Image (tube, rainbow, N blue to C red; front, side, top):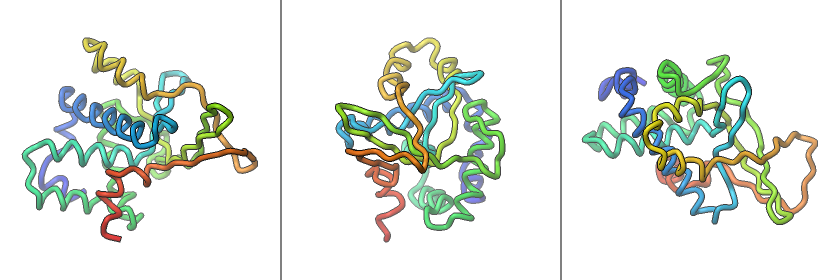
Length: 202
C-alpha cells in the first residue's frame, strides 16, 4: 500500500482508539445501507463464539469502510483515487497484497483475527431462513473481534445496540452438497457503494 503510506500512516492512525471507533462506525453504516437495499432480507455480519466472540464479515466490507472513512477526512481527491487504486477488484495480486497489509494493521490493534495471513479469508455461504425462503449470503469471510468493539464502545450503549441490530446469530453454513429450494443469494459486489467504487469503470 505504497500510496496509502504516502498520504497517511494507517499503522499510526488506527493506533488511536477514537479513529478506530470511527472506522467501526463506517462498518455499521455499511450494514445499515445493505439492510435498506435488501429490504432487511440479507445480513452481511454474523456472530460466532469459539474461545472469544467473533463477527464474520466479507473482507471487501473493510475496503468500502476504509474508503468511506477516508472521504470524511481532508484527503484530496487525487490522493483518495490513488488509495482506491491500491485495492483493485480485478487485480487479485495487488488486491491481495493491500488486504494483507490492511488486515495486519487491524490485527495489531486487536480488531481482526486470522491464523494465516496468506489465506486470510474463507469462501463460504451463510443461510438465514425466513418464511420458507432461504436467504444466502456469499462471503469471502474474515473474523472481527467483537470483544474489541464492545471494549471500544463500553461507554456508548446506544452504539452497541445499533450494531446488534445487524448481527445475525441464527444461521447455517452451507456446503457444496446443500440443496435448497426457494433461495435468494446476495454478495457484497451487489452493494451500491462497492459498485460505485470498483465497477463503474467496467
